[in-house]
Image (tube, rainbow, N blue to C red; front, side, top):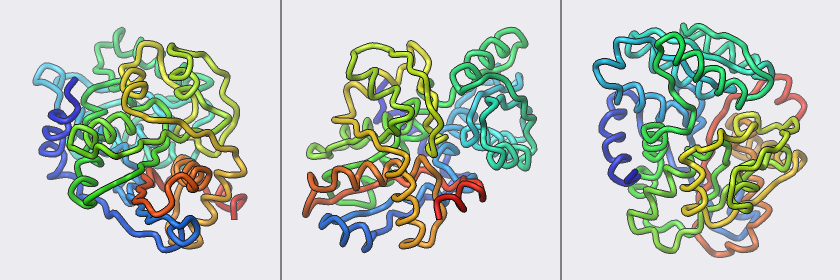
Length: 317
């Protein structure tokens, strides 16, 4: 897969449906760390998450035969809402499978967009495996949350926007679950000439699957613990194309505690007056943990989503 070329194609597909998101300078984070920090506000997407980029690109890239079949996907919430958004925009049918532990607010968001929701599996990996088998059995088109070139290319349009919005980026902090987001952004930016760029993948200590797999050189099965970063929890399926991309494109991985995620979320919400979810807090916490490495440098943090329940928000505040 040539990420650079596929991102350019994805940009042309999704632009009639999605607007460019802002890259906003953060006086608070800059002053706190002595870096020049910008935040890419994907929390302002129509579904409250970057996932809508990949989902729209995938749905628009289906061939004529595939378009005659309903789609099915698996999600902890954000990807499901993104697919539901795309199905509604294109007037197509589909089913969204979610695990037992999916956040009720994210399930409600999917339902509001008109998609059918079914619950199966104790975690996102079990749900993905079941949804893929269901698609094969019923003749549906399966859309992976991350293990798909079109999904990766759609998420990579963030990188294309960043290349147009920022002259030079020294460090990029991105939360990592299945790896589609960081693969697309890093793949595009590094191919576009951001040669000095350090790409840092940020994961919760309670669900560090991709980081452990890259360090081990192979897929590692890890039992995930509960985490505020529910959007990245649960790891990735064996054989995912994102593994090799993460191994090659991501320069290092930083693991953060639940306390660090919660504090990063609270600080950002208070300083920027914007809602964010745990996965976005993970990227902020990763930067704060490593900020000493990037003094007087240009740093971008991808604020990947805003979908947080009121009960979780209350706990953090």
